[in-house]
Length: 79
Image (cartoon, rainbow, N blue to C red; front, side):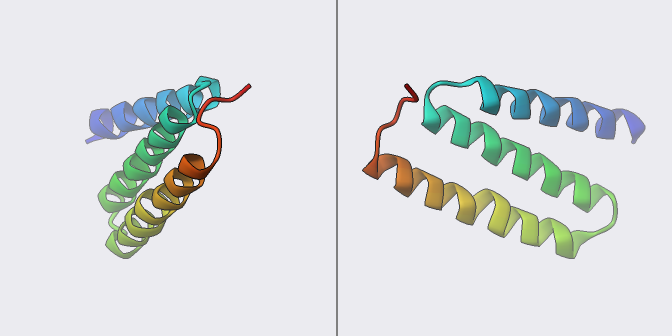
């Protein structure tokens, strides 16, 4: 169990660093969505399924959809 949690934390940190480095904003949004999904998995493993569902619904789905809509209406690449 500890190995799974530590692997997920390492993947979460990697995705967060990648989201801050990417110049393509769509890739950054996808990486931040991955951070949110991993956080929801970690919440589920920590016996908090209600928090996991809220994080998956709001953090991963809704926020990602809003960011994608905003990026489609503006420039995709950071200058």
